[in-house]
Length: 171
Image 1 (cartoon, rainbow, N blue to C red):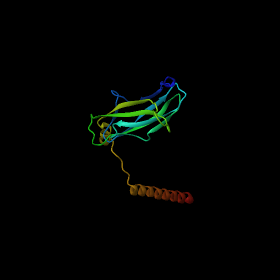
Image 2: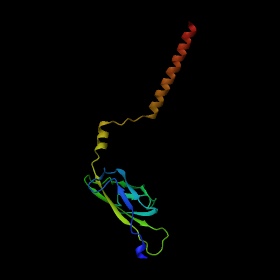
Image 3: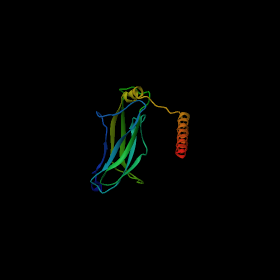
Image 4: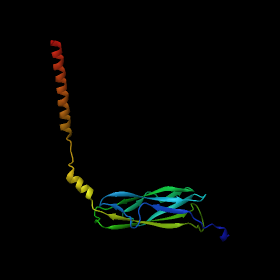
């Protein structure tokens, strides 16, 4: 019976960031790293349990179970990252997401595949926001001034129309 069990697994996880190629965010900034679940060269669909096992102070996922169809490589797991305002530039956070295949409703011993996917998040200086606030002045509109200008334009338009109409009648 043990020999008839297939131990071949085609489950995998791909990520757009890894150690040495970190996600870069500034203090107070948020972003999303995308994990792609793969279930290739098989005829069986999978249910995968996803848990953040390291870096949960900055990382979160919306749900813990994902259904991965057979012969697909595009089941997306968004990992939301939020850097605290108090984080110092140069700080490196490591995020680890553990994934394991599960059999829903199964009883007894269930064999499954598990793996950890890790990536780094590097805190960088917020240069863009500093230059934006210095170089590009923020324009603020006062609603009262805008309405007043609009009323003056309408009155001038009406007076011009009346003046032109009187001039036309006098000819």
